[in-house]
Image (cartoon, rainbow, N blue to C red; front, top):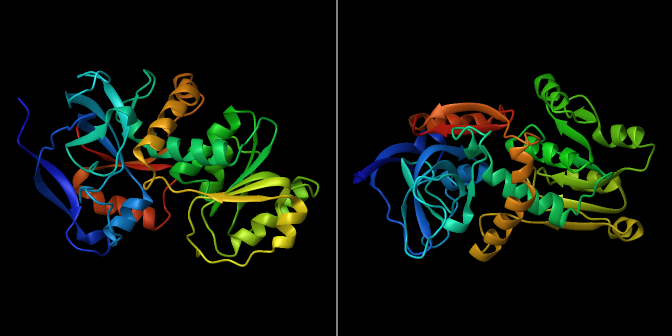
Length: 331
């Protein structure tokens, strides 16, 4: 028997982590094309922090936080043949993941490989969608090329490192502090650069004998962009994921034109359902086999109980995490 009510986490008002509150909500009902998932774990992501801080939600999206979960399908909406009831899945959501139950588009539910514990699988969807689209579609990373990944100790960064290496690319990566640098080396990056004590421009030009890198995956923005462009090789691609140090930049178009560079970017949440479904198909074809083979796995920093969602947000805001922070919902 399905319960009528469930635990869920919302922001009672815009503000810091302390505004997060565990409340009782009705268990949602799956509509046409949706499934209902009993949540095992929920991923914690920076867009959740933006939502908590007051960023307006897209129309019709629940105020319950959470953009990715792992769990078990327990009910189907009209028109859904797969995944069937009882299937373990990891799903990308528009919202609602910080809860005992959530609804997801059936097409955005990925099967959980047998070698990946269901409790850890919530660390995959947001990273997989982000990395596939930005690193391989927009960045066009190819085997034998070199990629620079900034903020590489994050959940997306650690996932991107593994994906790049699995495709035969060489990875240079930046992070802050000895502990994070050690973690990047453990992941096998070719050159880990400590942003606290090293100039990544000088290191890259030295290590590549002045050629530079083919792709930059940047989550910093601000003055990093000009520095990134200076280390891109001819024909290089610059992909912006976010702009933690500012969205407005000065751009030297002469450099861009002389090197034949391209600058592109994307953000996941506003993409259409059709585009997300397309990405899910690509991930199923290209990345899930690598996860099943043990070549890619979510790097986990810490798993906290749902009631401690505020502490999970504090970890992300302090940049204290190496890999993903998850919320445990069901045992």
